[in-house]
Amino acid sequence: MTQKKPLMNNEKWNQLSVIAWKNQKNARILGKTKVGAAVLSGKEIFGGCNIEHQFRSHDIHAEISAISTMISSGNKTLDAILVVSERDNFTPCGGCLDWIFEFGGPKCLVGYQTEKDGKITVFEAQELMPHYPN
Image (cartoon, rainbow, N blue to C red; front, top):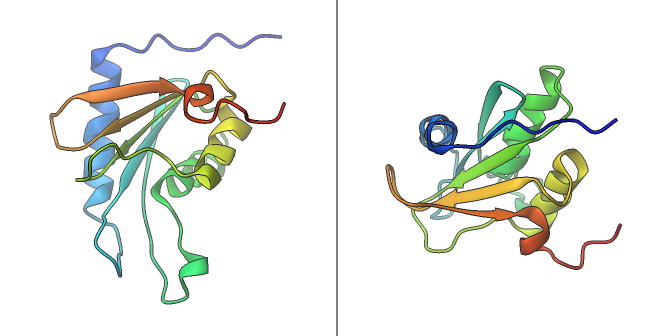
């Protein structure tokens, strides 16, 4: 059975933006980059932020934080994700894209925004990782 993805319009992206920037403020960083994320699953939105640990291998990226919150709430399908940070051309890393592919698939919409109320650039996950294994 094919699940119908919700229509993504400017209003939905703006809702994701508000949640992502709100969560970005809560980031615990040891470096320089605070990151926020918001995921859409059906009609619900879940947020997350990066949580850095003194042993950097234990860091939690904002994307994983938001997806974990989605899964913990009982939702299993990722329709879209927005990542926000005050950096240029900031997209999810390969590890985060693994999670996006796991729950959203290759056509999952992945957006990034580098300033509040700024332009949101959107890709399909497969555009960011075109040779992802099937």
